[in-house]
Length: 161
Image 1: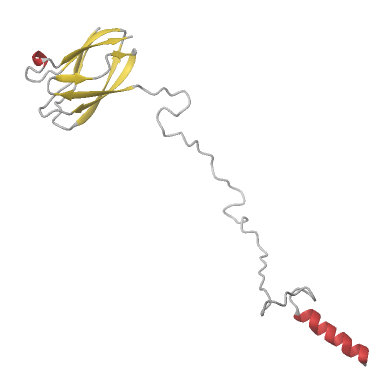
Image 2 (image 1 turned 180 degrees about the horizontal axis):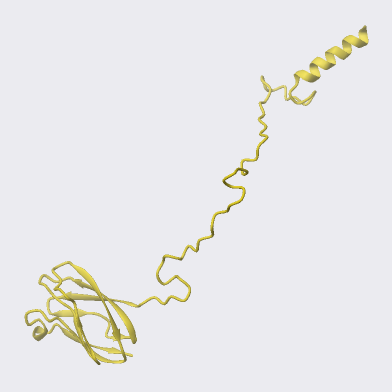
């Protein structure tokens, strides 16, 4: 009878402990709760046979695509009777970013070496626009064709190499 009782006490102690016996941490008042999942969270009909496509992060950035060459961007500032811009440029397509920092309306015209181009509309004070021009090596005159501005000194000469 003594063996039966000892076995019963041992059975109760062993099954009452969530860790299967004397491994229980007595400093805790309640046994630790554990959770077991039987399914794989990565498995599923929508993920089992497909994968996300690899996308080039530079795909939509101009100048970052393989083989793409970024066009140089030249800042041009128009003020009362002055044009501020680089005096030497490289041959090829030039992207002029033009801002009217003056108080009057201005325009941008470029002539020379077979090129005659200008903005379709005058720029009012504070406005910005751009124009692309294909330039070959040579000398060009840049000026403002508005109301005699060229005669007042709003002209410069640039060299394309």
